[in-house]
Amino acid sequence: MGAGTPMSAGVLQDGMAETDTEGTDADAAVATRVLLSFPADIGWHGRNRLEADYYRGWLRKTHDRASEGDEWDEFTDVGCCGSRMDLPLRVEAVEGGARIGPETTIEYTEREACGVNPGWSVQYDEPEPVDRG
Image (cartoon, rainbow, N blue to C red; front, side, top):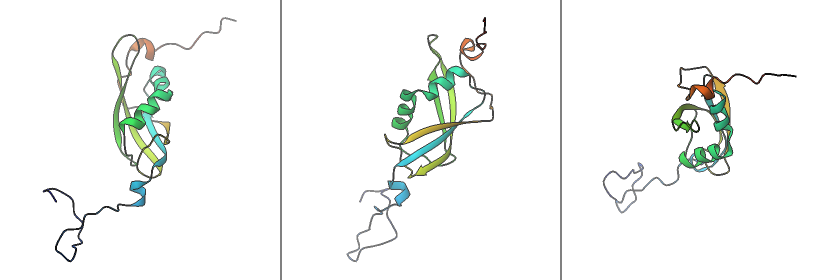
């Protein structure tokens, strides 16, 4: 075993260290659902990005584990202007195991505003459509 290799407290009779390969069931199991919160002050454009299938897929690919309370500093583009919008996400709940896999459902809930930069102001502050009928 190389230096820095984690070992359990157990020692085999021949004096060799025993490695901890079992872990817990929750560590090995794939999460069925992860609930992430986003700040209330992101605009409609950021919310649309979060809801996109490709964004959920990207989150599943870039995070291999989730635990309640984890904070993920994410971002998304804001469209044609070429800049980005920061999206601080927080893991609010994890169902099933701790690992994130392709079958893990990603859901969202809103939390208190935190002064996040919402990105390009035209996409953030766009007024609601006017009913001209």
